[in-house]
Every structure is written in structure tokens, then in C-alpha cells.
Length: 118
Image (cartoon, rainbow, N blue to C red; front, side, top):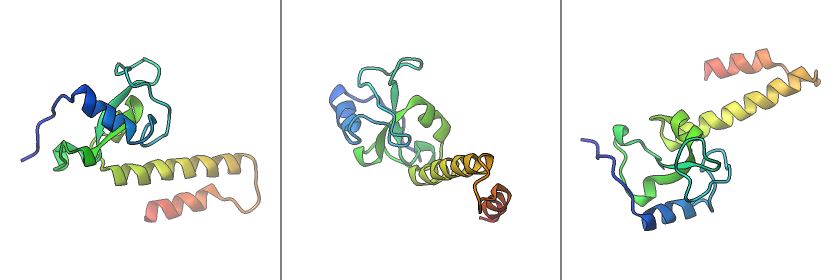
């Protein structure tokens, strides 16, 4: 049975926020402690590294500050799964840029083939 979503105290939020020095755990964007509403600069949510729906807990070890975009994009991926996907997207972006700049030895089609086989 999964745990229920809970509200966190100001002290708990501060402890979670401080784990990354006030940046999103995933994209490293600067966050603003008091901004928790979408559309506000630096707005963030408390993210469950392992989603409650997937058996995660409300333990501080499983909680991370995440910008709203990353938290919503992560959905029920585990922190590890999302980190791997985020890294992959960054790599794809770099390869696409290299291909667009016609750098020698870079083939986006070859990269896509390898990615699909993964």
C-alpha cells in the first residue's frame, strides 16, 4: 500500500530545499524558497525520488527540490530513471546541434539506432 501525500512543515521544506543548495535536483535551475506556484520565477515542488505510487516514502531521503517543469515531467519515473532520461535528452540535443553544424564523425541517425536498441 502506498503512502499518502502529506503537507510539509516550513522546517521540512527548508531541509529539502537545502539538500541541493536551492537548485532543482534535475536541471539545476535556481529555485526561490518561497515560490511554490507555477509561473512564479524559481517556483518549485517537493519531489519524491521514488513516487508514492511506485512504493516511495515521505522520508527526507526520498524528497528533493524540483522545479515545477521537471517535477511534472518526471511524473512517476524514479529519480534514477529520470536522471538517465534527462542525461539522454541533453546528449541528443548536443548531437543534434553537432549534426546541424556538420561536424565530422557525428551521425544522428546512428545515434538514434543505438538509442532504440537500448
